[in-house]
Amino acid sequence: RDSPFATEEQPRAMSLAGVSCLVTGAGGFLGQRIVGLLLEEEEPLAEIRLLDKAFSNEALGRFGKFQGKTEVKILEGDIRDVTFLHRACQGVSLVIHTASIIDTLGLIEKQLLWEVNVTGTKLLLEVCVHCSVQHFIYTSTLEVAGPNCKGDPIFNGDEETAYESVSKSPYAQSKRLAEDSVLKADGQVLKDGGTLMTCALRSMYIFGEGCPFLQGHLDKCLLNKNVYLRFS
Image (cartoon, rainbow, N blue to C red; front, side, top):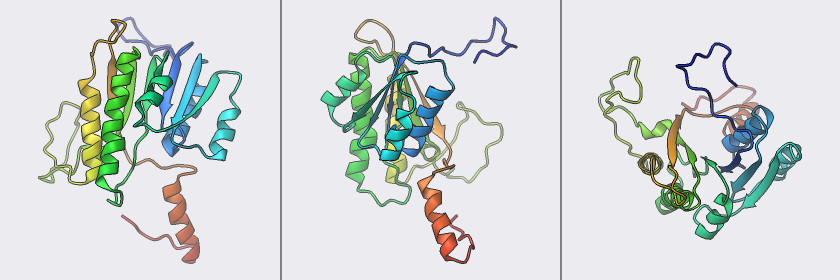
């Protein structure tokens, strides 16, 4: 929404009215919330395409409630399938890329992490250039910053603040490489002569209603005489 206090010097928010948008990872915890916000609070989009490897019946039911206001198209497939990505991106002007394997505990095979998080992101960027997608938003993670190797706190920091860190876990490394690919693609010339604009948003740890991570701990709490087990 435009602020009533906006001045000529302040840039106005991009209008999503009539935009065709693709959300990858739309069946996940974060993806479902992004889709809900796009459909509930923003101006009507022309179309929103929801991409994921699979969708739960609950998610499909939730998305089905919005049919009519904005065309909702469900796309089930693999982020590593280039042919599938071309079909998903054709005619789209905005991609919100949340599809990722999350593995903060180091339980997933490194090769699979790389194939989905790194290679999948690179393939999607290449397809966006070929299909002339103008805007690309990537949900990165706080893990990319890594622990400060000196243990120094940051005061009033921003994106330009020098920060020495080491990403040791395979998950953090995969997200860093994917983020690097996204940022390097900014300004790339599209097939139709336009320009690709990209950004990466480093989210904090995400929780809320319906969070599967919290649900597991709440279940343990109930089994432990309603005493919550400390896990961090």
